[in-house]
Amino acid sequence: MSNVNANLLEVSALWARQTPALRGIVLMCLSTLAFSIMHGLVRFVSEVLPPFQIAFFRNIFGLAFLLPLLMRSRFAILRTQRIGLHALRGVINIVAMLMFFTALSISPLAKVTALSFTAPIFMAILAVLVLGERFRVYRWLAIMAGFMGMLIILRPGLVAIDTGALLVTGSALLWAVAMVVIKILSRTESSLTIVAYMGIFLGVFSVFPALWVWQPFGLVTLGWMVLIGLFGTIAQMSLSQSLKETDPTALMPFDFLKLIWTALIGAWFFAEIPDIYTWIGAAVIFASGLFIALRERQAKQGIPLDPGPLG
Image 1 (spheres, rainbow, N blue to C red):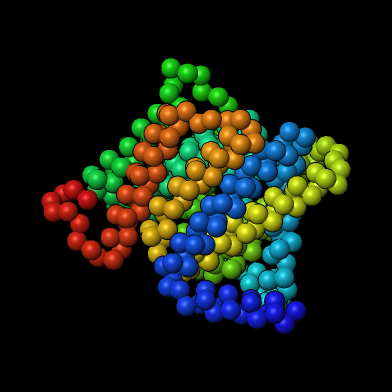
Image 2 (image 1 turned 60 degrees about the vertical axis):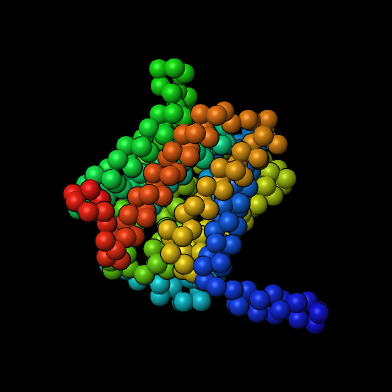
């Protein structure tokens, strides 16, 4: 046991000696891998259980991991004056999650992942419409490019648009709406309070959809759902900590790893080979989202943008 403790201390010291940027990148890569494994497990378990029921257990196990944090603070982090806005965010999140899990159950993993990259594009538009942020020509062009990437993947008029593609696109839009609500909440609420209420409301709001489609299952299936909860929690915690370590724009390029991981998982376990349009469209969507994030970072830091009315 002493050797194990010594090794853990050595690893902890080595981790502490790394730069915040490197720690953030490593955690971001871990997050993308954990998310991809969770999505693959959702796809696998959806062969025997409805996606709504899987989402319920994902949220219940997530809430179980959250309870120690709530108890340690003696539930002080639940103090809020904006319970209604937290509930609204919970409703939006649960609908987005149910749509996304359903899409995972009926569409190729890589395609779902590629289309999920549209969330920052929708977020940019909502930031203008709801938060009153101002964009110049370059960022509007990036938004248009993002939608072009989506059209490359969907190819409407050339191939039939499947239900899964529509669900994941709708889910991305709802995630963007939820992010706007989070931005509003962050003006008065701590990140811990926002996360705590998300876990609580997701757990509560997923009960009735799960009961509506409930199917009996065995211990083996329960074990798979525990893994879904575990990898989902690892992904969320790694992502949250990576954002604390370094600037989000330094991490965004590594988010594209999700497409690599899900393509490998889809090919190996489900015989799904992404077509060239998925890769091209995903690259266009991701590049446009990255560009928007970089321009926002420049604007916030007061870095001079390109001369003239463009920006």
